[in-house]
Every structure is written in C-alpha cells, then in structure tokens.
Image (cartoon, rainbow over all chains, first blue to last red; front, side, top):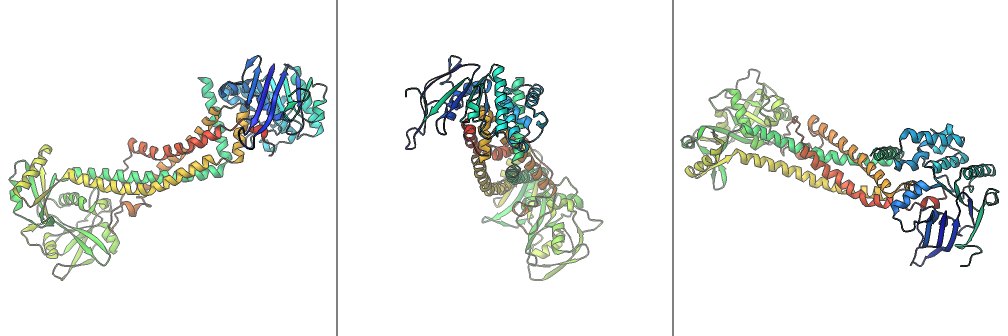
Length: 226
Length: 414
C-alpha cells in the first residue's frame, strides 16, 4: 500500500520561474490493483509517478510505503527501495543503444551482483514469455517499436518488483500493440502485482481490468478540496 | 564479497561496452594521453639512463684530475708538478695528459684531441683517456671495446678519429685531414684508423694523435702538459690528498671524481628538467582537455546515466563505472606510452628528442643506451600523468553521477 499525505512538488523554488507541479495531494493506492492516473499534459501525472516510484522527493508532505515513511530516507536507501520494489516502464522504451537486448534487460540487476548464469536465465525466461526470446542477442536499435516496448517491460521485471509503474506506456504504440500491452498488465495483476499507470489514452483508463482512475488537473486530484 | 566481485565485473563489462560505443571520442583521448606519457617517459628514461651510464663509466676513472688555474683560467701545467704530487702520502700513481679542443670551421664542429702517453698499452691508454675525457665531452661506456684499429699504429703524422668525425667529414682510413696549427701553418695528418661505433658515446668527436703532433699543433712546450690524473687507493683519503695538493701547489685545482659525477648529474637533470617544464604546458593542456571531456557529457551519455539511475543504479554505481572508465583509459595510455618510450629511447636512440638531450655540439654521437628503468621512475611518471587526469575528472564525474533518475521519465524524444 502506498500513501501520499499532503504531497507538494515545486520546481525552481524561489526563482521567478517557480512552478508548482503538485498541490497538496492525498492519495491511497491499494495493493494488487491497477490504478490509472489520468489527466491532460501538465497536470502533474509524471511528477506524481516519479515521487511514488522514489525517483524524486516531494517539496512537502509525506510518502509511506507499506506504512513506512520513506520521504526522508537518504538517497542510497531510496535507490535500494526503487530497485527492489518498483519496476519502471517509460513512455519511450529508454533502452541503451549499442548493446544487446539481453544486456539491456539485465541492467537493473547489475548493482545487486547476482550470479551471471542465474541472471541470464531469468532474463531469457522473461524475454521468452513476451515472445522476444529470439531477439536476445540483437542490438536494441534493430527492434521494432513493439519489441522495444516488450524488452523494456522485461527489464522492469528483472528484479521481480511488487509494484509496476508505467508512464504513458501506450503513447507510442498502435492500437494492436496497446491491447497487447494491456494483456500483459492483466497478467501482472493476476500474479498479485500492484500496477500504477499514467495515461490519457481511453484504451487504458476505460479498460475493464483497471480498478481505479485518479483524475489529475493542475496538480490536484479532481473532486478533492485544495 | 562474492556479490561485490560479481557487481564489479558487471560494471566493468558495461564500462568496456560503453567505451567501445564511443570509439572516436575515446580513441582520440587515448591517443593524446598516450602521447603525453610517451613524451614524459622518453625524457625521464633518457636522462636517467645517461646519468646511470656516466656514473658507471666514471666508476673506474682516476680519483683526482689536477689542473692548473691562473687567475681563474685553466692554464698549462708544468711537468714538475708530477713529482710534487707523487711524493704525497696516499697517492698510488700520477700520469700526465695532453688533450684539447680543436674547432673545425669547415663543418663548424669541435673535436676533442687526446694524446696517448708514451708508456702503457695502447688500448689501456685510450681507455683511460676516454674515461677522463667523458667529463669534457659528455660521453659513455668503457665496458664496451673502445676501438678497432685493425692493426693501425699511431705514429707521427697520423691520427685515429671517432666515428662522428668520419661521418661528418665523410672521410676514412688513409685519407688526410688538414689542421691549422697555432703558428698559422697547415698540418696534414693521415687517418690511421677509425674508432669502433660501439664506443661512440665516448669517442664520437675524439681524435687520437701523438704527443709530438699535439705539441706542434697547439704550440705546447715539452715541459708542459694539459693536466694530471692521480690514482688514490684508499677512497677515504681522496679528500685529504686533494687538500694536500692544493696546499703544496697553490695554483693547482684538484677535481675529485665525485664532483665530476655531480656535474654530470646536474647537466642532465637540468636538460631533463627543461624538457619536463616545456612539456608541462602540454600536460596542462591535456588536463584541461580531460576536464572538458569529462564535464561535456553528450545528451546521449546524460540520457544513459538517467536510465541507469532510473532502473536502480546508485550514484556510487555510476561513479564506479566512471572510475573504471578512467582507470582503463589511464592504464592503457600509461603502459602504451611507457612501452613506446622504452622502444624510442633504447632502440631508436631517442630519435625525436635527440637535439635537445644529446650534447650541444654539431657532432651528435650515435649510440644505444643500456636500459635502466626503475620503480621510482615509473611511480614519478604515474603521478605526473595518471593523477592529474584523475583529479581533473573527479568533479565532472560526480556531477554526471548525480543526474536525477527521473530525467529518464522526462525524456520523450529519441
């Protein structure tokens, strides 16, 4: 369970260009559910997602993970939580060019020093499950958009995280691939994982497997008093 | 511990692939870095080896050389000094020498002329003369055979010349060489032989002529010689003998072998130092380049670091990656530069720096130095090259490593 209490995020504080991306957000995200953060561009979806995923800290307020306050933890501990608890799927596949699909997929596990053969088996299994096992040795620049997206999903799962975070995952996918992506999300849900997605794609937030849609506008949750 | 080792292996693997992905940039840096190490290492190897070689030569040189000084100027020494010095307790042997410089305006070169004394074997004579000449002509090694005369005999009207002179004047055995004597007369001397090329460090500009011809050429009376060599058996008595010579012969100037060694040391320390000072500008330019290279991360590199941070790499992991990157470039450049410098100095005779480091005459000796490389030299070199690079890249690396992990989420282009 993730709880956000009066979370604020201000960029360029104290400068003339000061900008408030999130204004006093209170949110409870239940476990083993698919939650969609919906809203127009600039509504604060990605900022909220990066705070939930321990990638950035709020300017004010608290974030609790499984009841544990994590806002004030040093960077090292936050990274450890991020590595073991969250799997990230970005708007772009964000794969590193010039190295193989397999190497890309194994990247998040490198700092853990897992045994090479074991890690390799795990990565190959993940690629096979998403039908891109035959692309393991290929360089990422040779992949199609859908294959690259699936490779990034396997990478997100390499450390077996409990929570999957996906930022606008269907933004660069066609309808067929978007449906395919939602099938994968359904599978995650069935495995007991928590999924948080930001999207303004109806195909995502209107999907039957989505448990909750949170509407964001101007850095606030719609329907909540400021 | 096992996890830690495995982690380092993963990071090193990733670093190598990362370096190879930016071939042009990294090979450019590596080439420049190697060049800097090569220049510094060549200078150090050369000066160190030549000093070492000189000290080995001078090891067997006479303990004291006595000259005569008149009003601060070197003057001819009366032969009578020889008996006075012989009578000093502790002196094992005293020998007189005739030597001098001759300027050849035709090729603008200075030659060193030596006369073998009447007694002693011919070879020993040249050996001992060459040893002491080293001081004056900055030359080499007596452990090698000094000359090959092929049966040539030095007699009045003949001379034996060094290889450098033979090369410079394009002359050889049997040819005649004209000299302008002190009285304006021309003396034609026949070349009886050429000294072996192995002895070139000692004898490149050397000429051996008979005492008779030497005196005719320079106009020196038979009661004078150029200087004396004094052999002292007990090393602890050298200083005492030198002070006694000064006391008994107030115009004599005894030069102790250790002083010669110190002079030699300082000449090459100075030359090497000058080279290093000149090239320190190159090192500085390289440090600026390294800083620029490390701080001017490309958009692609920033994006990569952002992705690594987003997928769970810590700041320290990125710093470790950059550390391995620096270590690989540094060590590759260091060892390549050192090996190239070794080949350059000890196999090609310092082709590039020859004019700056070898002698000041137009007669450069062609010789191969015996390799002397020690840990101290390599450590100094390491501190002159690898440490400045590392220091220059620390801050940019730290800045790169602290890129926000959410930068990967903000990236929307390709």
